[in-house]
Length: 188
Ligand code: IMP
Ligand code: MG
Image (cartoon, rainbow, N blue to C red; front, top):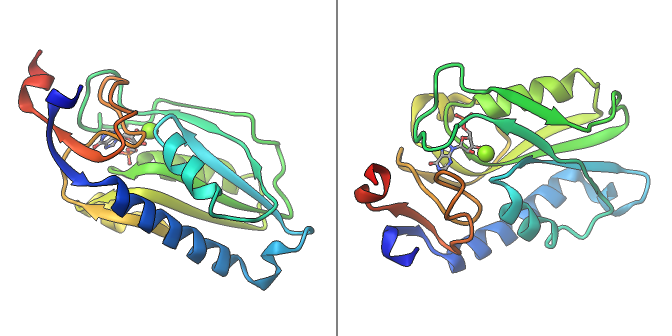
């Protein structure tokens, strides 16, 4: 696995530091009442790429919160670029009504923006008290830079990356750093 890495784009220390900082910002933006029990905060992580990010983030957010995962499929198998109308399906166990709930959607990476906009749309229909979104990475391409998002941990060049939850063909999610892969990996 290590031999497949081309270069480390963001190392584990930089990730940890930024995730800690971002958690503080999110908590601060929820306001001084955020620690009070009557605030109903629900995090909606988008599977599978956000799992490591969300697990680190929530442990830096000392708030009462619920977690409801959502699954969106956009990059089938070995694809490394968004496929047109890329979002294929969304599976969610969200309740029909999210009234009185403050929702924070969490995803690994903002690329074409399709995943996040589908997730926002599905949640908005359920009338949440507030709706924000947060991504670990945002690619420096127009669609991503123009997409609606409230929190971004890192902006990165428009390259395919893996690690810290992000996959290629469902592999490499367990790499602790965010990396690019050697070209041979894609042509195997
Ligand atoms: P979007 O819908 O095009 O914004 O893409 C978002 C989803 O595509 C992410 O949740 C990832 O699962 C996947 N994705 C996009 N870019 C990358 C990448 O560079 N590496 C791994 N997965 C990616
Ligand atoms: Mg994903």
